[in-house]
Image 1 (cartoon, rainbow, N blue to C red):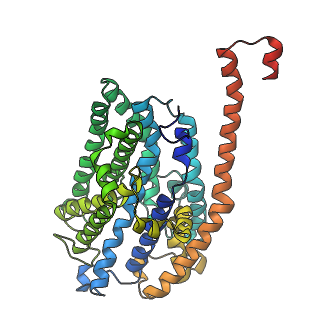
Image 2 (image 1 turned 135 degrees about the vertical axis):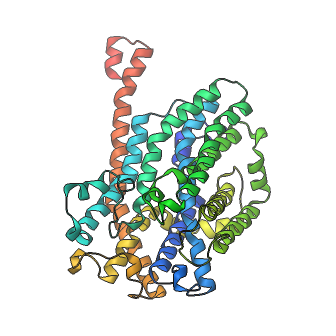
Length: 436
């Protein structure tokens, strides 16, 4: 079935790289790098060290933690969209084998390469059991929590993987809920019910993991549940996008607003970022863990930032010269293409620059114990250059070849099955059948 008004199959449409979405990946990857460099050079410290060390710059740096949320929304939207099409416009059910193979080849090879590097060069002297090595390989370091130098930001990888596992089951639930009614608008409303539960549940869990009895940075902080709301919002945007594609006259109100005033949504994103900077009920410009009330307010601002940033980028026919200028330029799109590698490797570059880790003759130290080893601008320049270089090599010479290998395997399987299917549907004389 062809997507309405596109001239492409839904699968082709989903795979097509949209310039602004590549660009937002690159922009957010750089934001994540900047905030981690700020935390690792003393620009941001705990309130026990006194007022923010760099004044307004410390406050603005803390707010850049919002850069992670759009990645989760983007994952939820792009991965769920084929399932949403199945439910709303009757396209074939996505093949789960292909889904898991593609997701695994996108997520795991680069991550396992990083894991091997960090275990052998940075954490080798800390290895005390087989489980120490296996824990990150099987993506369980979030539950049986263990810190690994160089892998500091990779707590999000198990979160992504677990969402991949849950997504088909969630899609089945939403399909059955929607299947009980025929009206498209009612289908959409029913599909939104589980997503609303996920959003509210994520907000509640954000408060729970800041309960006083758990203490600062408990193991629960690394669990995926508080981030599921961002995936849910992405899935909701996928539903609205399919609804808009299939029935342009029934364009959802939020997409109509984004088409009419796209830049206003980015004003909303800026306002949400400033709320995070202001840290209501907390200490601005610090890395303090905070109370449940503080965490729940911040969670709303984090989610709002990602929502307002992404809506005008995914709304059909929404466009803005500002957004095109910021996101569609070649450097930003290139950074988006290699953004996963930048995210994976930027802490490794820090540890190598600090000369910290087993390869340098001593067990590694936490990054916050090394804040005097480099200034902000020095470390930022090194980390940006180093992580881009490593990510480029990893993507073009390791990750992409494996993804292409997976796609070739899928095509061969499809070509092998297709003649059998056609023969079963339309019996042919033996001689003709042999020539198919």
